[in-house]
Image (cartoon, rainbow, N blue to C red):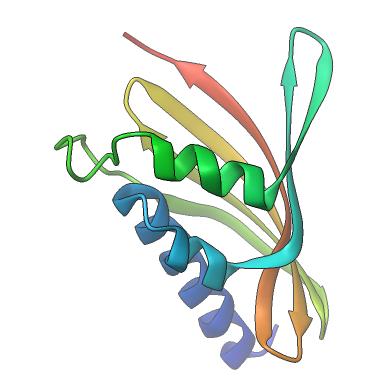
Length: 125
């Protein structure tokens, strides 16, 4: 994996983490391709959330930074299978919710973009 690709993907991930913590959809917009969807499981049913709908949710909730919630986000794994595809496994949190995200990247004309997010949520009190 070329060092320049690693650095570029890590920069997108930092923008993603900042956007989540700050509730900043402009930052999330910079990280996610317009076609992106988010997927999760709810009671055995796959939930398919288009990016724009997720942005509306982010805008409507109090942001974690303003609420003074603890921030801990980290890259658990980064894998690049070719010059245009990569996968990151990350951990982040909006207490009491703790997330594991699998983020699929494509290298576009605008640079590396997240095109898919599959996540699970653990709630801890």
